[in-house]
Length: 576
Figure 1 (tube, rainbow, N blue to C red):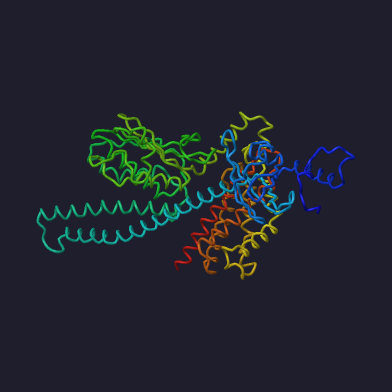
Figure 2: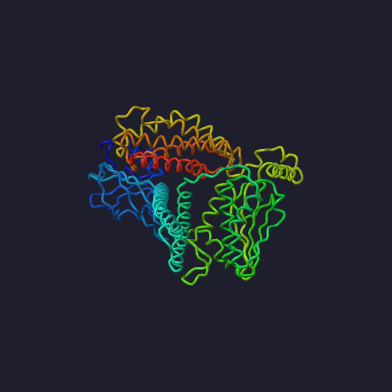
C-alpha cells in the first residue's frame, strides 16, 4: 500500500497496541488528526455518496458522522478547484456557507474525492454587509450629485429668467412715465398690474436662486459683528407699509437696543428678518399685533442646532395669527412647503422663505426655530452667535458652571470630558502615522495591479500616489484632534478638513488629466478605504471603550468627503 492511499481499515481507530502493523498505526494517528481538525473533512465516491466524515463536517450539517455516511453530498465536485456550498441546517432552518476544496485520492482501491469544508458564514455576511455599505455610499453620492445638478440647473435658469423680468419691469416703468405717449387710466392700471406681477415673479426667482446657491455651496456669508437694533429697524422700514395696509401694530421691544452685537452677515440677517416679518403680516388678521424682541442667552432652545457653551443672540418675531398645526411645524422649513396648502390657501408665496432663512442662519453659525399654538399665534426665533462681550460672557458662564458643579479632579482632568466612544482614536492616529509609508506602498501596488485600473500600470509612483501620504497623514491628525477636542468642531479640525478638501480636489483634477473615469476613481477610493480600514482595525486598543467599527466609521467619514470632492473635481475638469 502506498502512503497516498486511504483504506477503511487504515482509518480504523482503537487498534490494540502491539497488534497493529506500523502502517495501521500511522493511519490511526492520521485519523486522530483528521477528527481533531476544525475544518470538515469528507470522502466522497464517484457517485457523490459520502463514505467518511469527521466530527467538524458532521457539525456543519448538524448530524453525526455515522448519519452522514451513505448520504449524497448534494453538490458537484471538481478536483483542484475551490467552490462554495450553501447548507440549510436541520431544525431551525439556519443557513450556513462552506468553502469546499477538492483533491483526488485513493480509498479502498477506488478513486475518490477528499473534500475539506470550511465554515465561511461570518466572512460571507461581512462581504454582503460591505457590498451593502458600498451600494448605500454610492447611492448617497449619486443622490448628492443629482442634488448638485438640480441646484446648478436652478441657478442657471434663475439667472436666465431674471434678465427678461428686469426688462419687463424697466419697460413697464417707462410706459407708466408716459415716454411712449399719454396713457388712459385703464391702460395705466393694466401696466401697473404687469409691473406688480413681474416684481412678484422676480421675487420668486430670487428665492429660487438663493436656495440653489445655498444647496450648491456657492452662497458665502460674512462673519462680522452687527447691531440687532439697526438690522431690525431696517427690516421694519421695509415691512411697515404692508402692516399699515392690513391695520396691524408693529411693536419692537426696547430690550433690542441693549443686547450686544451678533456675529453674521448683516444683509442676510436683514433678509431673514424681512421674511419673518412679511410672513407675520400675511398670517395675522387685521387689527392684530406683531412683536419683535431680542435677548442675549447662554441657554438656547434645545431644538436649535447651535454651538455648545456659547452665548447667542435670539431675535424673535411673534404674531397673533391663527398658528400652525403641530404636525406641520417641522415641514414648513422644507422647500416649497407652506402651513396652508391647496388652491384655497390665503397666503401667497413660493414656500422658500423659511427654507432659505434656516439655511442662511445655519451658515452663519445660528439657526431658525418656531413655536406655535393654534388659535393663539406663532413665534419665529433667529439665533445668531454673540460677538465680543457676549461670547466672553458665555465662556465665563461655562467656567463658573465647572467651578460650581464639578469636582476639582474633574475640572483639572481634560480627558474626562472626552466622549467615551472616542477614547482610543489617539492610538489609532499614532498607528496610522507609523504605518504611513508601508500603507502607501500597498495602495500603490494594488492600484497598479487592479484589473479595473489598467491606465495605472504605466504611471510613475508619484503619479499613482499623488499626495496620498499627505491625505492619510491629515486624516490621522484629524482623528487625534477629534479625541483631544472631545468630538467638537475646532480650528484645528477645520484646518485638517481644509487640507483634505484641497488634496481631494487636486487629486480629482489630476486623474481627469490622466484620462481616468468616475468609476476608475471610485475603484481607487475603494482600495484606499479597504487598506485604511485594515490599518485602523490593527491599532484599535485591545482594552478600552473604542470599538473597531466606530473607529473605521470615523475614518471613513473623512474619506467619504474626500471621494465626493475628488469625483466632483474630476467631473468639472472633464467638462472644460
